[in-house]
Image (cartoon, rainbow, N blue to C red; front, side, top):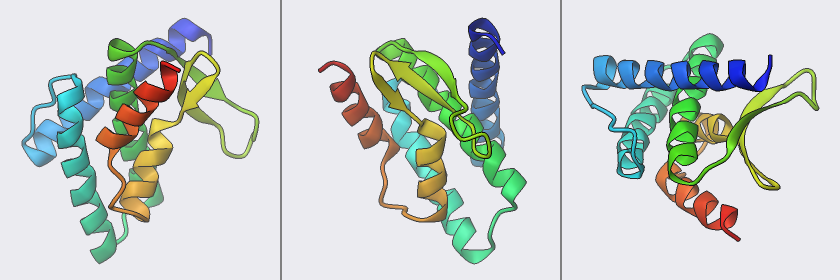
Length: 135
């Protein structure tokens, strides 16, 4: 997949996240940094659901990827960068936003918030990533 195809895929995935959040959580994401607080609310809800009845691996994969795409698109619009496919480990490839020499795997952070640690704040993570990107 070339860079343009990857960009289009991630933009479409970010739109899927907006639709999912609107339909399932009745929240309209605005595509800005402030909306990341709403993303944290959605992920906290998914974390609570995960504790009661674990999500299927397929659902987790999809949710983490679309939410990660949304967060990444907000980051790219506000800070810069571009989507990169990391295939170093062929058994676990992933998408991340590359900015300079830094890589931000937003979908992985979503996964950890949903499955392991609800105290993770994606809003804080993006703010820290923004600061790191500017150094």
